[in-house]
Image (tube, rainbow, N blue to C red):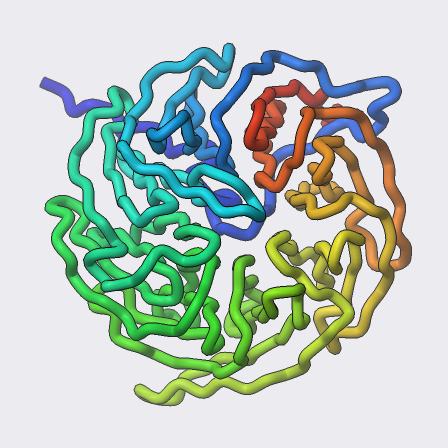
Length: 394
């Protein structure tokens, strides 16, 4: 009997895409939305939560709250109709952001890895939703539920599943669910583990109250640390082969960005601060890198800084506490505003220029948008919708 063909890789495997960098590659869209407006494909109510989407060939996956049950759900990408729901009798709520899970599921090798706001880590069959194993990362790491809930999106590295229980990483055996290792406690964090390779060494980086800590994914051995007191919600970003851009926050806002040069001599790791900038101060709104510049939210206003020295290029355009993705092939930012509007902004350092803006969804929107081919997915704690974007002529 011939071997079955390998399954197609997920089109958007989880939080902020394949590299967790918020970049969409291989897609070019028409940016004149007066002539080629987004076309609504479907719209449906959804339970509260700040999860984004993971997407395979025919389905999307997200997390939400329905009453006293936390849900990991699969929906049809074409119609928005529900396919399956996994339910856990747990509920998280806090006064700032309300109820529901905060993290985004991860797709890997036919499974869904989902981390809930109270610390439940579910591993489910992507086709059926059947439970493969479940752990409480809160109990496994002796970590109380953070003020704003557990927010880490899992990452799978070879045979290890890595989650951040607040500022402490934990590695689980992918098949059995047994705890493989526990990392050091870095203090509070709402960021997710970030997989990267420096000097040929694969590692997982986490931003937390104590700064940046990078570990070996196989056993959790600490490779290097950089102290920058504060905390983190957003993801780090990789510049070239060894430089990293990180951020720190206070409880009232962002402190800024810092570029680090990380290198290795033998078994020793060295970390050098290149610059620290207050020209772009992300809080919980992720930033993107493009062609030597960083673009993101400085408070509620978009800004750009030069990655060579951290100097601000420009600041302009009010989108509240929105989120964005980069269309890397055509130097365009696709912004989902806090009010649910869709906007296109030039990813160019010389000036701020909004290209287009149209209504999208209703209600407070903090969730990251997703673009797979010509389908744009957006959601908040009340509804989700899919739009078809016209592809640009080649």
